[in-house]
Image 1 (cartoon, rainbow, N blue to C red):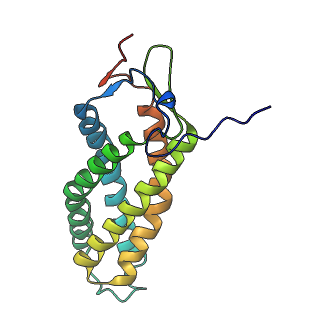
Image 2 (image 1 turned 90 degrees about the vertical axis):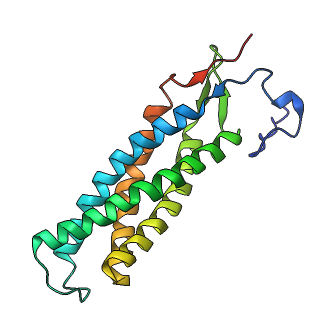
Length: 181
């Protein structure tokens, strides 16, 4: 029995592997998807930053501050992330749209992403996004250990949240123009 060749990551090397009429993923879909993720991500960052500043701040040598100051710092981190992460997310999403790895066409002409694709996409996004959070944490706290803690804990919470966000969006047809037959 002959093995099927593995599909290339960045596109077909053989035209027969390329679907004749792939669905079109509209940019508006990527924008709305970015906004929905940013809402989830911002709430997570706000809560996580506040908890770390409250529980671990003194351990890392941060000056003792009021609860209002901790909320303000956490809000600065989370709200600045809205701009940086939405830009990064949109670019990440558009890059992944160019890759056909672990993606198939269903009977209606829509792409169906496999679990391996969702998991790999989750991991690449998390590396990029956690680096962004650590930089913002450093800028707003001035403390490297606190910044690494916020970014480190965020890896765990956001990996789980992002995976389920991807699986949810894989089922939404809005913004996908089916392939013409």
